[in-house]
Length: 86
Image 1 (cartoon, one colour):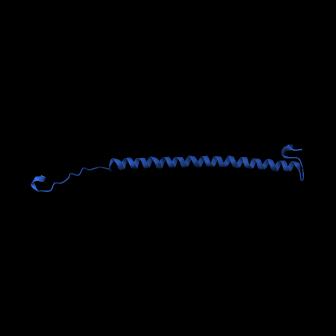
Image 2 (cartoon, helix red, strand yellow):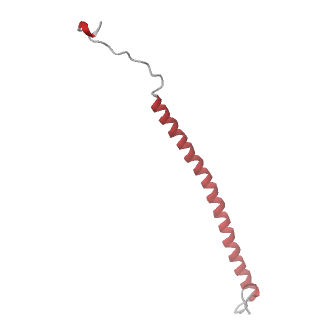
Image 3 (cartoon, helix red, strand yellow):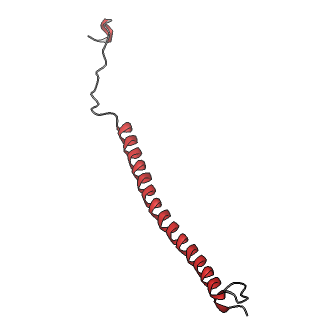
C-alpha cells in the first residue's frame, strides 16, 4: 500500500512514554523554582522573626533606661538620664 496505488497511507505513531522532552524539562524547571521559593520563604521568615526580636529588645531596653532614670531623679528632677545633664 503506497501512495501510488491510490490507497491512503498511515503515519506511524511513536509512543512517547510519559510525555515530550519539552514538557518534562518545563515541569522540572517549575518544580525547582517552587522549591526555591519555598526555601526562600522559610529563610526569610526566620530572619524576620530574629530581627523583630532584636529590635523589640533594643526598644524595650531604651524605654527601661528612661524609666529607671526618671525613677532615680524623682519627680521634677532636673538631672538627665544617668546624671548626664546638670
